[in-house]
Image (cartoon, rainbow, N blue to C red):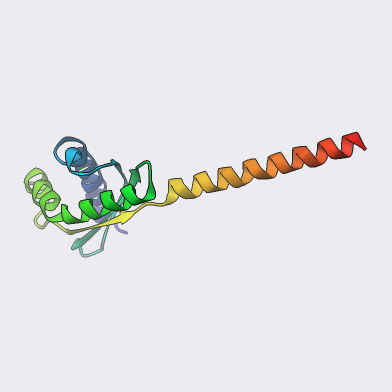
Length: 127
């Protein structure tokens, strides 16, 4: 990704994060955080990575679906904010960022491995 797409991606990430917090926060049933953005070389498409914090996977899917339904309104709000900085507002595509879930799963597995090792060490010490 070149310099211009990187700058536009950072701008889009910041502005959409602010929009989701201020203007669209009440439209989704869960907390949505923008974790990143990438813009294609031709600046036509922006992938916006979001992390959704919800008590259940079902609620998380509902929130993501709602976010996708709101995409045209979010793009219009984004356009009104950055129209003086860019000629063309890229098409927005929201993607779920699973990084935090993967980190949580890895931490759980490591905790299980540590617990098993402690049990084995305790058995070896007793023998």
